[in-house]
Each structure stands twice: as structure tokens, then as C-alpha cells.
Length: 456
Image (cartoon, rainbow, N blue to C red; front, top):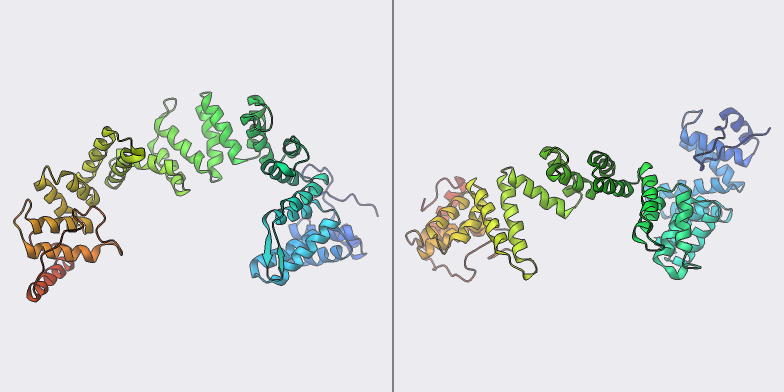
């Protein structure tokens, strides 16, 4: 009985998927290829209800008869078992079956073996040290057998380690082979190579041709690069579409760019809600510039907390690199003041420090407002002003009350930071009776949520 077996690894194969009944009959008669194909049908539920356990039984039969692809499937089975159970017995079986599949010519197995030697493998009873030369050997074997992924992995390896290459063009040749086989990552990197002129002359046209091919297959970095090209050409809506496709795959830079377009671009109507959404997404993915832009956007929209953080950003930029620009310093306190006016305690404390020397009365008021919201640094600064009698009558008891409260609310391990006015200031000692009274005042103040406190 002649059967045209389906080439599962070849997505362009026009050969029909084999009939389940015919394949099963041949498999039961001991045909190793039929056993492998039957395992795939059962694994993927094609023409029959999916049954991974029965699929594995047929893969094992086929593997025992020497079928390379079945041996790779058996290796994969034990690898999955090892990953879920961490039982080293499965890990060793996975590696041993992988070796058999490699020796029989499975390019999938050879590619995976190359990756193992590239990264190294260590489990109880088995250790494979990283060896780039051996990794290159297996990638070459797999590439020779037609693996686009092996071509790509080999190209990357030779690109990073030119000494492993047979000649200066070998890395580029493997990138081209993988790209021409349709590997989207290879297509993207080939685009980068032509864009940067690293392994060949720069060619912007070829670069974008490969970027577009990769983008059509959903390669997120290629989608981003195509988007930047469209944006440069003024095709904002098309650019947004590609940025969005890249962003959907979790690329933070794409979210960041969308946020900037909706916030600043003059060729499209501003949409601050979308800008905030994408800047937030990028921030969650760890994009530092997006975080700063988001803070600025929310500050401009009147959010007190972000007005304070925006003030911090500007003040930090003022000090960055030693090149102090006075307008950044001034702008920082504009935003601190906006935040303080809305009652944000950290901003009130910051403004209190800023105004302390020139306007102690205002500083005292700001410290007091922040202290009553439970901010430890402001409570400390207020204690100092009571102790020194600045902008208020000197009051040792109230000063020590706020000192005790501040010490009880400060972060663990923090003694004098968070804007405390004088780290070396020593409060006047109290006798036993005074200390009991101060502790009672502090307890009442905190228990009433700062509603009933001495000195107020």
C-alpha cells in the first residue's frame, strides 16, 4: 500500500494529511513511518480525537525502530516530564533520545542539541558544559538538513564569534539562507545588517524589504522598524498600526512611541487617554523614559502625586552631570508647589524645606499639614521648629511628641533622611515625668489620627 506521507515540518507542503484508518493499519503492521505519522495524528487530533498518551506509545514504537523524528518526539516527551517533575531520570532519557535522533539526521534534534551546547545543561547525573564549537557543529548539521532555525542560530553564533566562521561572509550567508527560508527573526536581523552596514554595505532599500517581510510574519521588532520608517515618511496612521502590532506582543518601545504620538504629534489629533494607556503599558514593561513621560502627562492633568514626582524628575535633571540649569530647579519647585497646594504631604514637606530660610512661617505651616497626614520627615522637621522656637513658641514637650511620632513612623533603618533639617540636632533631654507625658501625648495624637495633638 503506497502512502504519500505528509511533511509536517514543511508548512508549504501540498501533500494531504494522511488518512487515520489507513495510517493506523500500516502502523499496526509495523511500519515505522506510519507509527510516527499516527502518533502525530493522535497528538494533534487530526482525523481522530486527540490522545497524547496513545500518541506517545506510537512514537515510542517508531523510535525503537529507528525513526529519527519519532526519536525526537520521545525526547520531547521526556523533556516535558523533566520540566514538570524535575525528575533527573526523565532529563537523562530526553538527552539520550535526542542524541539518537541527532545521529539519525533529525534537524529538529540537531538544532536543539546545538542550543544545549550553546547554553550548557546540568541535571543530576548529567552535565554538558557550554561549547560554542560543538554548538556550531550541530547547527551546521541541522542547517545542512534544511532547518531554517539552525541557519539562523548558526548565523547569530558566527556573527558573535567570528573565529568560528570559515570565512568573513559565512555569518551573512546563513542569515540570508534562513531569511530566504522564511525565518522572521533572520529576516529582521538581515534588515538590521543592511541598515547598519555591519557585515556588508549599507542598503536602506534591502533593509526595509527584509523588515517588511519579517513584519508581515509578526516579528515585533521588525514591525517597530517598519513603523518608524512610516512615521518618518509622515504616514502616521499606518505607523500607528504597525506600532500597535508590535506593542501587542509586549514590546515596550512600541507602546512608548504610540504614547508620544498621541501626546505630541501634530499630524494626528491628540488623545491623552490613549497616550496615558500606552505610556502606562510601557512603564509596566520597565521602560524608564515612558515612566517619565507618564509622570509629566499626569502632572499636567493635575494629579498631585505625579506633580510631586515630576518635580523630583526636574530637580534630578538639575543635578545630573554637574551641569546645573537654574530653570530646571525653578520648574521643579513650580510643580512641588502645585502638588503641595493640593495637599500632597511629600510636596508640602519639600516646599517647607525650600521656604525654611526665607519664609519660616510658611515652612512651619507646610510641615504641620504634612505631619498631620502622617509623613515622618515632616513630623521630624516640625519637631525641630518647635524645639528651636522658629515661627512658633518654643515648646519642648510638643517638639518631643513629634520626634517620638516621627521615629515611630519612619521607614526601618532610616535615621535622618527624607528631608530632615538637621541630622545632628540633639533634642533637650526629658526627665521621667516629662517623658511619660510626652509619650501619652504622642499616643493620643496617633490614636486620633492626628486630630488631637499638642501644639495644634
